[in-house]
Image 1 (cartoon, rainbow, N blue to C red):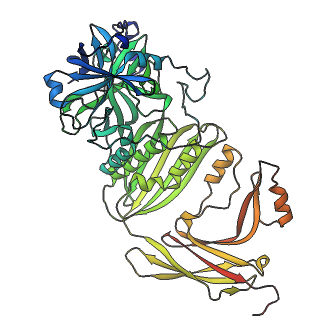
Image 2 (image 1 turned 30 degrees about the horizontal axis):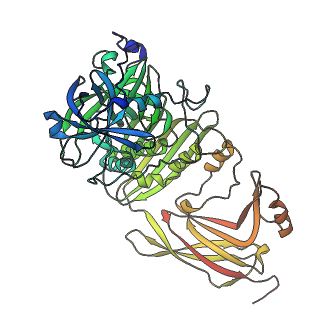
Length: 584
């Protein structure tokens, strides 16, 4: 990537004059104009369009202009994915940006977002100065309780409905499995993964002014480096160092801080279903600061921070492969993008689709709060996918940190050290039994746990479980589970550091954990565990007059039994503890 000081600056993009506006109130059927987009390379070219109608209130408080393209090049391919944002002019005045289209359309019809709507979005008030999540000299996050993306359902392909034109997601260095998983996650937003050249080390073609002229190809960098994923579209307008593009949202995230890159088009791939531009990113030229219903808004010369993701894969005890990528720093995107990088790195380094045991150490560096290191042991019969990674503690910990309610957890770096062994070394818990349903208080029970190995014969592990004397005369439940499925006994966190301490505690995947629980409760209060209290004390601590109450804590005893292989599954059984002094 070129440093900002190395960008070509002749002529200056910050002095490009804004075109006159063709107001929506003057748009009439039959008007003839021209749209501008890149068909090949980096130079925008015009094509003829004719206005068919104005569709009032197509979106809440927003009209859409319906046009037909009358150019042989567009008639052949229709409105291709990647044309989103192509400016449309009438009498030399900017009317709007191509943003909507149909799948399987027989005519090159498009919906145009009026430029007045886009300009109104550009004037949307920004957050107060000093917002720690959107600075341009360090990591930034958007705070909130959730760490997942959510999109309104898009109609199935072929449904006769005007919808936002798709954006090609130019990917490189990504394994087929990771590309498929990423596509499934982002397809509801209209992002279509397409293999293209990566973004590492490419230079700007021409001057910066040429790269940001109306109709030029631009993209939003989600992942860059050895593994790359960039959403490609078209630039609508540049004025005073501010860029508007796409004409519809990228992901609908609102105020953001994501890299804006220039791009080039290799070809337009015509398709009956949905044509698309085959495009690749070039170099970073600014930062997207708004992701709005009417398009994206970016600032030239601004640097968008990202999170380094370093992955080291060791296989067969000696072969090592390293991957380095930078992923967009946004709390809703980061878990998905980081898991994509990790699963793709493993898929590229060890592409075998077979039985494998994976030991993964994940380190998450949190600004001002230290690091969290988490060990996962996973088994897969079909290689490692993003879906399997989503179940790993390292991935879940990242989501927990980003969505914590205490303070912003600014992730500065993610490291994954993965070791792969090709063996089906896993067994499922399929049964458990006690010698007697009535047990004596204070005795150690020989709990028989039946395990079924993958593609093997069942065997039994005997787990010694102590029944505390305090449980005399009570009914108990024994939960027999794989270590990875059991949540350790930790207090409810009160701070970010307390959450990080909890994330460090876990049971190994190669273990059986037996939890003995009773109807009697202890509590977790202000970061400490109090395992046994009388009812009167519990009622006081959980007073209905307080909103900050103690949380129930029911596990009376827990036994950890190491195993020589990964364990999965769980079973439950109940027993009655004899009263003290009872011989039978």
